[in-house]
Each structure stands twice: as C-alpha cells, then as structure tokens.
Image (tube, rainbow, N blue to C red):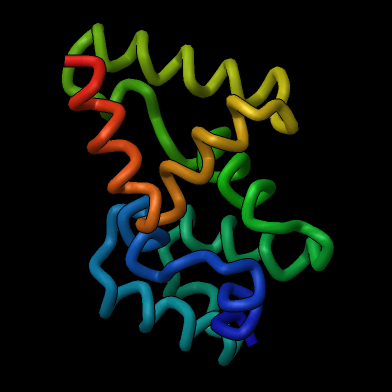
Length: 127
C-alpha cells in the first residue's frame, strides 16, 4: 500500500500535498485510487511520483525529495527572477552533491517541520 510506503520513508502527507500543489483530501483520494490501480484518475505528477516511490523500494526520503525537485517543481512557477535564481542554486547544490552536509540540511529543512524553529532562529541571527 502506498500510504504505508510513504510512512516508511517518513514523508509527511501535508508536505507531499504542498509539493504536488493539491489539497490533502485530494492527495488522500489519489493514494486511494493508486492502491485500487485506478491510475487514469490520478494527476500525472502525482502518478509519476507514486510510481517512483513504489518501484524504488530502496529509495528513502532524500531520494524522493530529489525526485520532487528534479521532476515536479518548475522554476518558472516561482514569482520573480531572484526566487528563480535562488531555487536554481539550491537545486544545483542538492543535485551535484546529495550526500553533502549542506544538501542533507537543505532537504531536512524542506521535509521536516521540526526544523522550522532552527530556520526561524537562523533567520533572526542573519537579520
């Protein structure tokens, strides 16, 4: 079952819904449809991600986040050129060296709500 696999890799459904730009109820519906093999009723981005997750049993959270960054997030969706530049730098950092401490930290910041306090602190320090 897909939901079990998502839990196994510790990918929060709230965050996954954000990545896929769908509501949580829609995501739950997609997961249910996927488990029932009703693939034609699932958004193409979600279906591609679900297939990646289920077909790559050794893939962990970091691999899934890399997949999302490389395949689901469009730089052009960002509001302005400065955000686009920043996103490209983050993406390049993670793609070029996904095992670096910096990449691991960036991935944890994006995928782990527990990191929010650290991010807020660092933001305050930098201001």
